[in-house]
Figure 1 (cartoon, rainbow, N blue to C red):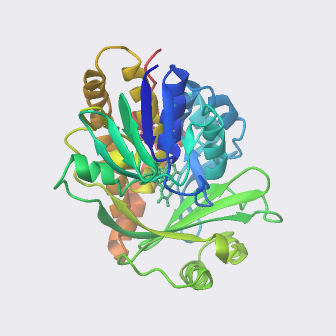
Figure 2: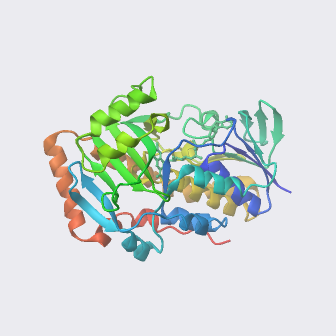
Figure 3: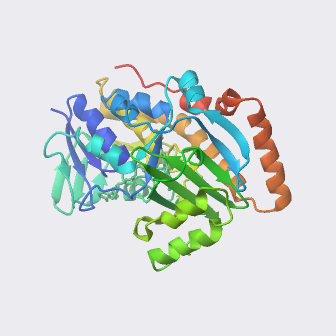
Length: 387
Ligand SMILES: Cc1cc2nc3c(=O)[nH]c(=O)nc-3n(C[C@H](O)[C@H](O)[C@H](O)COP(=O)(O)OP(=O)(O)OC[C@H]3O[C@@H](n4cnc5c(N)ncnc54)[C@H](O)[C@@H]3O)c2cc1C
């Protein structure tokens, strides 16, 4: 049986392991952390990723968890709509909605697909030999026909395979994420929306079971996180207390211990390839992006199923990985760039620039719910390879 070693048990690594196991590969997933508990936040799974998840048998289980109903779109900090679409319009256009759910739910669904014993926690990979497929971990050595490096934005595998390639750059924004109870907040106020102010963004995304996923970004230099969770919450309150309902109430409800702050970095220089020898890079290790299109994990999921398809075609692994690069580099590069350009717009704080930006977004929105969606066609209209 062909052997694959997957480095990293994030959404990309778990999907790759599940997709490879489904095709008869023996998989070992090395995860340096002691558990696969992800940050406590929500995650948007778009139609393109739902179709990819169908190929490993969990698409419908994710669809069942869809909680977002009615309208969704982009608002001003004061609450007026800049651009509006609806869940129904997305369903009609793409055959699927965008599903919002807890990140931990996705991770659990994926981990359940792994063969028993495949996941090795507390196992850090220290080095990979791309030509032979030898993987050195702190618990000994492994030999693989295929190595999947899904080791995240700070991938040490990427650094070793592409020495000198520019590191991810700071996007100019820091982010906060938290999940709060939505009990008692009227359904109308709880519309799924991202609100744009001057250099700041706040997203409100209703989840199942009376919970709501909130995220925010602000334009500040990197490395300014606070020492305590209470201070992070206080900063959020200070920044967003004048925003439209229910934002101040939701921030007020946030459990400080569940507020996650992270500076947002991304790879503005694409790699020349997503493979070297027997090693494939995927997910954030290959093409980390800003979260503005909600596609980082979705693209990792796409990568994983395309990779499994390519190595499942038979032939030398090196040739399959060259085909994987040909499939994935042109797909992901424009998505990274588009996310970055939306990120740049959300950073504007000059009142004239913000007025002009809002006018352009609302003009596009005036053409109706389908027009607002059309801009996502290139991203959402993607189908996994057959077989
Ligand atoms: C604020 C914010 C909101 C976002 N929202 C969305 C969204 O709604 N939808 C979406 O699709 N994407 C979203 N993203 C992006 C998404 O979170 C990432 O793109 C995705 O989680 C990347 O998954 P990954 O598996 O590639 O990497 P990671 O999740 O980073 O996993 C890498 C894993 O590798 C492990 N690892 C690293 N080095 C080693 C080693 N040497 N040995 C063993 N293990 C190792 C790490 O411990 C980690 O578990 C968002 C990102 C941010 C910052």
